[in-house]
Length: 164
Image (cartoon, rainbow, N blue to C red; front, side, top):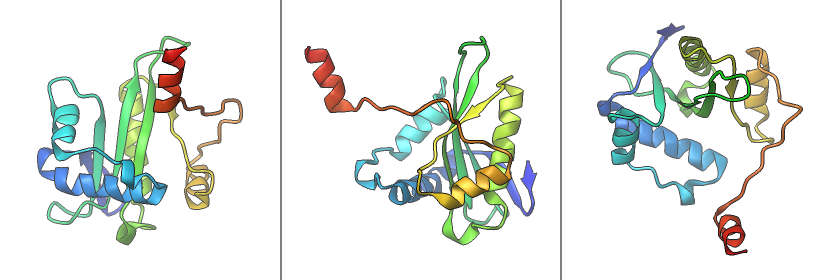
């Protein structure tokens, strides 16, 4: 699938070193690089194995050029309407490729995948201070969820709750 000058395709084993670097770039941008634990073996096992837990799409200008960006998705099989939801877990465009249509090309592929899977919605989260991403998503027709708040029970909270 093409999006302007970029080709978007499912990641392959040969992409793993660059895909890890894009993921690390997102982790640094979002402030959790010290907690980042994904390894190349994890990407191969969980993304390309017999029972993939996620899908990743990569964008590049040509077959010999470096990866310009990535989108990582997974599916929630069904919810209240007995239809699946696609979750966009990660979207990241390399510094040198920003502003050139990479993010839009990746999201176009995510939207196509949602249609292929009969998902009537795609969910994702955005850092509240990431005004560039918020503006970008709005320009594409996405809207902020004003009904639901995102909540988190982290490891200490899980342990405390179990101990009660």
